[in-house]
Image (cartoon, rainbow, N blue to C red):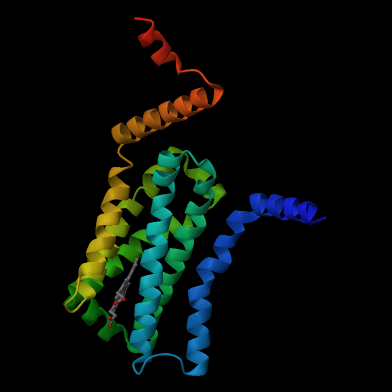
Length: 233
Ligand code: HEM
């Protein structure tokens, strides 16, 4: 009886595990709304909301960027299914972040907002990152992917520019300690390097060789290449 339930749950999880991205990505928003309604924000609630939405945005964007390199390194192709929802949730938080700043902080006063964007370089760079992400979010559907064909991939490569710009924005927004943006910046740099075609092919070759070696060991004989070498071939 227990095993029957266990198998059923495992099968459900196998088929639907990617759906877990939705509650996980929406949890910070739910917590923010809860804190706002119950007085759980800090003494500077606007700053608290700006920081929390900004942080959620950057983490989700980086997680979205990590799906492809992770699938290359591990061979786990299904993780690619998370790339789009993670990116879209990242964009959602970035938009909320910008709305907190423009609506709550500046009361939608366009003159003051433009003045602030022009005067503060970190806000200028953040705005640029968000503007770059906008067409990516709008064209993220299957329909747009088919309509744009090869250009879809080219357009979506702009994420490799938007995320580093968001990191620069994060670093410049800090008053003193920039260790965290530096750490995230290093992670983004690594994720971008892992996408370089030459390195990507190398990693895939190593991974396949490793799998072949492990399978051969399990079957009790050496991989083909090693057999030949030991035969003197
Ligand atoms: C992709 C776009 C963006 C991302 C990922 C992003 C992310 C972040 C992050 C991570 C922080 C630091 C939060 C912390 O201190 O823990 C931050 C700060 C800030 N961002 Fe953004 N941001 C983006 C765009 C924007 C835009 C468009 C604006 C306004 C037009 C903006 C306004 C601000 C402000 C005012 C702060 C300083 C908050 C404070 O410490 O007082 N950001 N952002």
